[in-house]
Length: 159
View 1: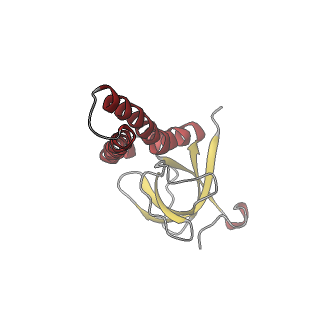
View 2: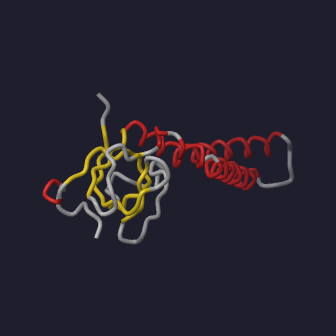
């Protein structure tokens, strides 16, 4: 059985097809990993999430949203670890290239520049691929139930 991450929120509006936009409060396990296909976070930790709506939730209703933990971890890997790998790989590659080609430049500085360029390219590629990722159900949360306020733990609903 797959492990799930739960959120509770309020449906703001129906979106295209069988999707809905839900206002949720970001929990401590969340970062801005990209798992939430479409999100706008504010300083209070609240964000809008586009989720698949198989239960037919309507605007104003409280809902439970679930995401597979493995998919959340994959999104976090893409958003955080993959660019870090590009930075570190670029540091080493740029440093070694500068040393082996006898360039008249500080190898450490050149490695830093190459690492930052690699990291920037990876962020650019991920940003360009955001449309592709948001179309995959794997990276989209799903509304699993319409709930009552009594069913929601205290402090997890957005204002």
